[in-house]
Amino acid sequence: MNSDQYILFAIFLTLLTGLTTTIGSIIAHFTKSPKYKYLGFALGCSAGGIIGVTMEEVLYKIKDDIGPYLTNFAFIGGMVFSLIMTFIFKLETIEKRISSPDMKIMRRDVVTAIRLFVHNIPEGIMVFLSTLVSIETGIFVAVAVAMHNIPQGFSLSISTFYITQDTKRSFLYSFFSGFIEPFCAILTALIVLPFLTGVYLYLLLAFVSGVLIYVSLCELIPIAHKYGEESSIFMGIIAGMSIMIFSLTIVHLLIL
Image (cartoon, rainbow, N blue to C red; front, side):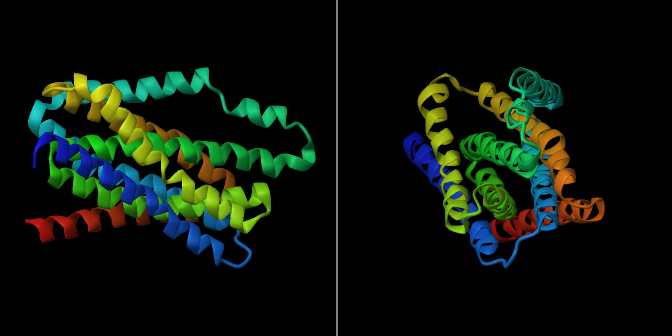
């Protein structure tokens, strides 16, 4: 492949992984009377999945190529950046503006939906950049993120259902959220990619990995605790990480 083919293939992978949210949306659409405990489990599964693939595949690959010091520096930088952004853009202000006590559930679900939408941004960038690092790594990450997007699509669909009380609209919202990933990949290719050469590509990928870990630990899991019981959330985290490790193992066996 030449460089242009690499870029097109990377964008194609982000499109496929983004559209797997549709599978979760379909499951949620045909689930009779979806309950919040399902959402807690699904969010835990999403968090566990993304933590698993980031620690097991992405950071491991980056450390092999540029060493642990630069990798850890960029990774921690991504988490610190996310923390600063959280302080600057406080989504809790949305909950306060919807002040009616009768809309307490809606306040919670609006914030959840926004966070799940935003969560797709670093995912799309990570799949895109990891594919540019190597096709093998890109496929590993794409498979893992795709598996992660199924419970995420389920979560987003249920969350928007409680906001809109419309199953069709919640399905469409979750479906179109998947297009955020290829959109962000295209933006990265147009804006950032011309400046990414050598070690800078790995540094940015490690930085995005830090963002995703922060989102999983400090956004998805706390949200899950607002909806589900601790036992179901921990089961989701374990299930998500297990699915990621299993899927990575299968892909390794198929390719290698």
